[in-house]
Amino acid sequence: MNKLKFEELNLSKEVLKSISKMGFQNTTPIQAQAIPEIILGRDLIGQASTGTGKTAAFSLPAIEKIDVKNKSVQVLILCPTRELAIQVGVEINKFLKHKKGIKALAVYGGQPINKQIFGLQRGVQIVIGTPGRTMDHIKRGTLQLDQLKLLVLDEADEMLNMGFRPDIEKILKFIPQKRQTVFFSATMSPEILKLTKRYQNNPKIIKVKKDKNIPTDINQIYFDVDVNKKTDALMDLININNPKLAIVFCNTKRKVDQITKILSHTGYRASGIHGDIKQTKRDKIMSKFRSGKINILVATDVAARGIDVPNIDIIFNYQLPEDAEIYVHRIGRTGRAGKAGTALSLISRKELYLLRNIKRYTKIDIIEQQLPNSNKSNISFSPQINIPNYKYLEKRAHQIFGRIKISLDEDELSGYLKIMNKFIDNNSSSSNVAAALLKMIIDFDHKKIQRSKLY
Image (tube, rainbow, N blue to C red; front, side, top):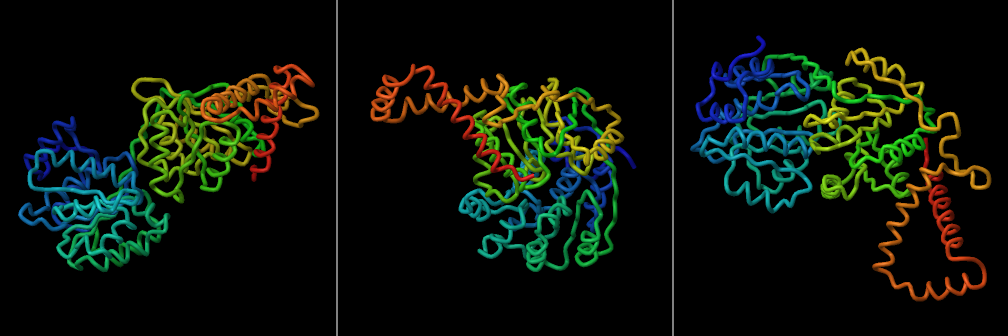
């Protein structure tokens, strides 16, 4: 079974009206196969990745299973991240636009819990939540699951990878044994199979491969870089391209922290996000990124899920992902709304096999280019011998001047001015002194960077 019209499925006219107004006519393969099975009440395992339409595959039948007269929670959808929970909640509320008497609420960490408690007390039938916050509400007694009909685990493999299994198993203890359980997962790992054997009853298994939606309007380039010179190369490329908004992708939380620290110490408007950063802080960082107050976001793939920011000029792959599909998902964040985008990858010799896998998967020839000034020592900072290239100096000076302007506006400088005037009278011109101070700041910043580099 491939595609059907939504009218061919057993969906209510109100839901069909919402679907039609959203511009959808035909189902995706996962929707065509999963929706009838879930409506029938069967347990199900859907092996499908992001972008296959799986949210509608479980949301639409979940809506149809709700008893409108019962204001208790009847459907619980667990998601691994706050961003995904919000995304699913938004989608379900779109489907509910013409379906009166059904309410859905997303509960997640980082949002004031009192606001969520108020929403739950008003009566909702569908709850979308992250495992931690869901368990928190259960402990407080603000979330009752004794009348639950359907449990959905969305991106179950990611929840296990993120260490949520204990929370999931605790939540399952508060759910009636006579229920319908649906898992959606990109992979069918042994851990997933253990969960399904324990908590599902003769599940129907549906496997759907995602249609490759390879972006063709993105300029994809890679640079062969020694692993110890990647950070300098990244700063070179940022300076030359001067992006208004850019994302730097790393594979680990530790690397995100390292690169963020280096860029910040060098004067770039950069911040990092990953799973260990508190949600309130992540929200603030994302708000600043969307508004342009910071223009470089350093991120892991998990933390970047659900991020949809228009006008991203460049995606930098500081490290290539193991999965070629993740590479496609990364670069798809640039070049939107008819605009051409750019994806620049820094690749060490050990990562060349990953590049070959990506090329085979995308069937696109990712072009190799030489790094700027690659025949020289790039940006070398031996303070006694080498001088940084002029473009780099100009960029750094501009950043430092910005900090100076703030100080001129906000700080009391009279004491410093008295000392400086005395020094200039006895020694040199103000221009020479300013240039010497600028050099000292740049050299000092670089020494901090060198101490931060842990390759």
